[in-house]
Image (cartoon, rainbow, N blue to C red; front, top):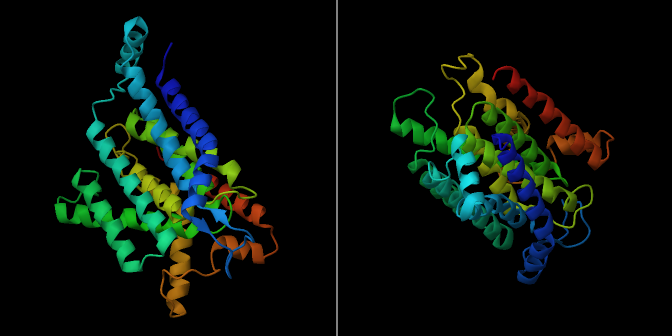
Length: 330
């Protein structure tokens, strides 16, 4: 019997396999076009590393949707049986195709902006302008936060603030091997599980695909790295997690729990908390908030005597623990 769980599992497995297998190809492409991270004063690596992770992750995320499209068009009895199973479980591929298309287009746009920043070190104002343009495009497709406030202007403003904050939070967390990708996989897993429990298939599929793609990238990045996410990958991961936090309805008639609206903050507490911490420190030191330093939680754990892999795994555990609270208010 075909169940929704099988669709979600297949999505994650396909995304994992494509991300894992395609990374070496993307690494060659990035080396040829000079999209690499050279050693530097604040860098922990001593050799040039390709910034190929974001491309492999996006390929992994897109792959299940391409496979699903091919399956939907299968002729004969097999195709008819699969289409019937999909429709029975409310997973109609055309019902929110337009919304999904805009979301994936926005992800591609964030990847491009991040890649341009990796290659050319864009001025902060130009990078912000590009991020904002994409967020406004996505918000115009009604992928917005309302917080029960009947104001379109407020909805656009709070949506822009949320997505840009989460993007930059994950960009800040991309400071040690495996940290950003691991936190992204954990967050995507929680969003997928919570959405699946409520029958919100779009978020469940997107979360399963994002989790699978990031897990496929991790063997190439942790504990030793043959590729980095770069700004391209961290922009993509942050964007997708921000979108997954927006799409579901947490406070509903079936789930009238008063703390349900805090679920996204619990799932993303570690990256958001780390960003808030370092921004305050930089502000107190009179430094621009976008200029990197070594005051992140990961750096402090290493200065406290832990190895880098141990520090990363401890932060993963913290994210898992805090995120688990979201399951209690579901």
